[in-house]
Image (cartoon, rainbow, N blue to C red; front, side, top):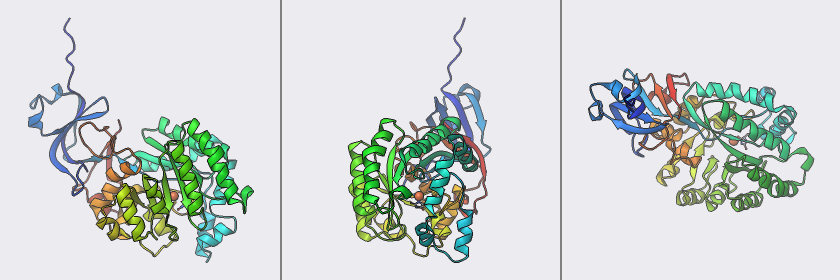
Length: 409
Ligand code: DI6
Ligand code: FE
């Protein structure tokens, strides 16, 4: 009996335009291309003539997909979300529109703490179900990787519950989930006026337990006058370092605390928000390769007027990413494409920069850029097909998906 012939690829996409995002200067366009994938890994990007069987496409792969001239990009990556939480804060939205501001609401026991109460009260299944709804909207826009933070539990048990829900989302949906422990997000009510004691709990109990259970890929904190101080953040970072976990930071969102500089001192994967970022911290970020994660949804929702220093970041060649910050308080966003548009309109980023911001630079912000974030031979076949005429259409449109199909490795 003759052996069935093994074909070079499991599937081959042909008649496709590719934005590889493999170059820092442009979209890395390969027009009228073929892309071959085997075992979830990209094996070939080239012309039909370069295939082993250029005139008999079926002989190259088990499955041959005609893209009819549509565009292929890397799968989109949302590198900063708080997707798992209980309840919502539409009531506070209404309060703000009646005159209250974010800091007043937070100080009055609302804000993050109202979500903490709802998250502690919710069962694992309830958290899973509400996060599923939000995840599904993102998946409809070609998302293949998402970062999900804890930080609405603020006790060991609930932080673990949130991270377990995040991991389960990654098992039940075709999406890679990177988890981040954000125990130092806010001061829980039972530690009122004892923030150093709470940081001790984070460092001595929560972090070692979560590291032991392998529930977090990274550690984050909220360094802010309504969050934690520079010194407290440093303590969290030092503990994360001892446990071998990379760090990232909510930095300079409402004021300059030099948090991004501190994050860079700890070789952070990213510093996020950055409206009040100083030149000194920019230089430190450039040196350490820390990605600037920009969150236009929160900027918009809080009606912030101070812009992050985009031109200075650009000049210093700090890689910039864009994310939803999907959370109930400051960015109830379920559209990554809308963030691309906001990155252009509010932050004056270019369409190329915003697409880099949800592909290769977002992968860097998660430490996953060797695996995903661009269409290159050897990388995971996380790719999206779009019904567009050019990749600049992805940031041009106000949300609205031109998504056609996702390929997930
Ligand atoms: N910055 C934010 O934008 C979110 N967390 C943070 O540290 C807001 C979280 C919330 O208000 O629920
Ligand atoms: Fe956030």
